Length: 143
Image (cartoon, rainbow, N blue to C red; front, top):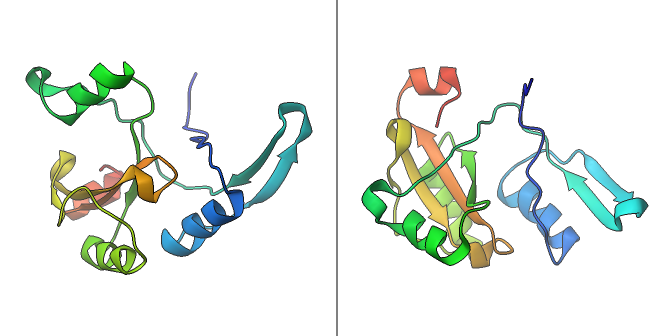
């Protein structure tokens, strides 16, 4: 039985730079670094208490997900970080040089305000920030 999402792995060209990004820019707690000789990798972990898997499919065969599927045929699309003040986070990240796919957050699933950080700002990974608009979503851990 599957009971939790263990982790999402992201291949990065500069581990130290990426560790700094997740700690300083996204405010995640760094659990540590480990070399795995058998896999010829160095790893770094940032545990998060609540998460979910979101399956995304194009509505009526249109939109950016359709373009993604046409280009890549499926796969990891994005990571999403929950925010308690999305406007402040967007401003802070813009000051650090992050590029976004839109000028401001828009309404997304579960009545959340959402915005996406351009993948070229994050080692090729599309990152979404979201902020639930009511206490029920926050309490249920939904986004």
